[in-house]
Length: 512
Image (tube, rainbow, N blue to C red; front, side, top):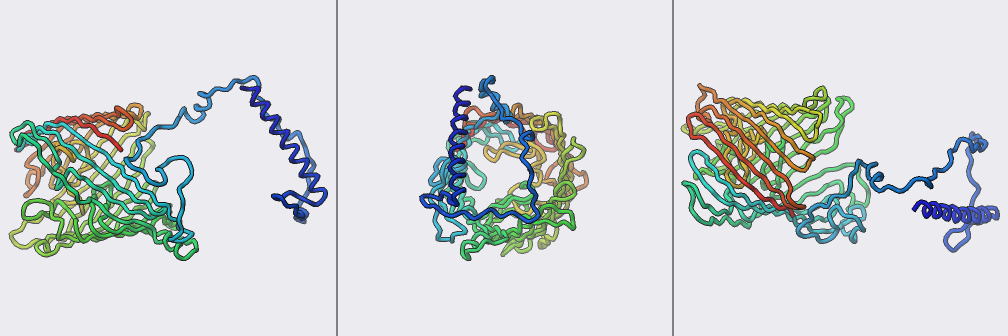
């Protein structure tokens, strides 16, 4: 192998020498080769202040030689940390340019302008979740097998414009297609929750890119936007995690040297249908999503060696919900301290709800959430954490279908499939937290062990938790094939002034 590479290098240098020699001879005659034609070359332009330096071969090292070294493929991989390509799951359907694949691009079209080329493609991807669970939620007890399909349909038009739809054909209104086989509340049979209504359906793009295409001139601004049944997530889904009919636009990637801000963006959003909040329900007790409008502004700012998140928004009720709307404001700061602690502090204010006489106020108050994780000697795989909260009165998210404690711990979050039990997640007149540890092994498995507790304020009226609560939870998951994941969950909760809760589940998840 070594002699072959050395001979090839000598042949290459020989051919290069011939080309240089021929080019030099042609240059001496005032001619040069350019395709099949000879063109006269102008003399080189030399600046008047340039100084010539004598050539000194001693400043150059000799070319390396490898005649005594054998080729080691493993050593070459070690240069890049021993990394190698990973075979990843492919979409269920790909038409047009493949996603993150090598090879030539598909054909471009210029009907939106030469500066915003159209390269259409269609991708369908998602996952299939099936879980077997036995859940005791205190007031109900049920053993079931439940199935969920998350189906994304993405139609890319240009590099910045696309149409996107998201379907969940096996669930509706929080209930999933399932087979109930045990428990005091079992129907002992199949329950169909088929649903053909899209959960999201929107168009997104960039005004700057579109204007560049139409005008034929590159623009120096970006103005991304989305319109339709648009999903919105702010504060990791704690403040807003909802899809509503409306739109949004953003002012991205700004900076301010005067304020020492390296990067910030501002997003404006509004919605006029499908807006949900746990604070406002219809006459049947379900989430009221027909008579609420939403308006808001959210920002993200990198400053003070960390980053800030802030937002303010309003829910405006219509018809019978006219007096139940409210305002919400939030601010959060996240950074690392001393190379050993990652910390986020988040505040949420709910105010302005003025229900009529005889109707209980459901949205008013303040909640403080503090998230902490230690940076260990294995910072990517071993993460101890402690998250705490305190809530006064009835603070609420601006728009989502659950309470504020979604990310506080695994014992405050259900599985969104089988009705897995959880502690009270509202932060209404309670305080508490979760202490746990997450271990990711070699980034191929996950183990989470957690203890969580909350305490209800004794003298608070209208609290959602009837008393103190404590829980132990366990989660384990790992891939068992290229596109299959198995997950186990177990928890038990001790509830004051209420029945205890417990649950165990096994889930198989296939990505496509």
